[in-house]
Length: 99
Length: 99
Image (tube, rainbow over all chains, first blue to last red; front, side, top):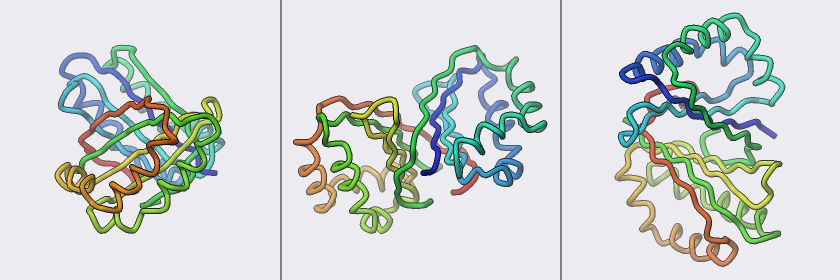
């Protein structure tokens, strides 16, 4: 079954859009690593939070991607702009439209 | 900007898989109504919750879909199997992979 992930991250005041750009700049590598879907979203009712929803071929592919040099570099660049607040929900994607 | 929605619903004991099947049975109508993505997921650490992640052309399309006869009928069939616990997060999808 496909592996799904819903996560949110808090950003320091005024840094949200920079982090969004960073997250959207490394999509090619994700696809090659087994990521079928990676969406970056914001909400008008919370200007310091970013939501990321992901679908992967497998949990193993997702976990392995965290060791990729470009992913580690992106995380390193993002961390100083984050405020330390995270949520995460791991999922098994049963099915749906648009996969 | 595309409209995103992350929602969870609690199900009565033993009814989760029936609700999942119901949610996955009406996908054609959703696509015609402007839904680009509609994923139904579960988690092994919570056997009474279903997560639905959606991407729509617009919030207006999403809101209008709730008035469709087949959607109202599906909601009516699902309600007796739900336990009344819901979460929801409305989003603006900035971009990503797999749209």
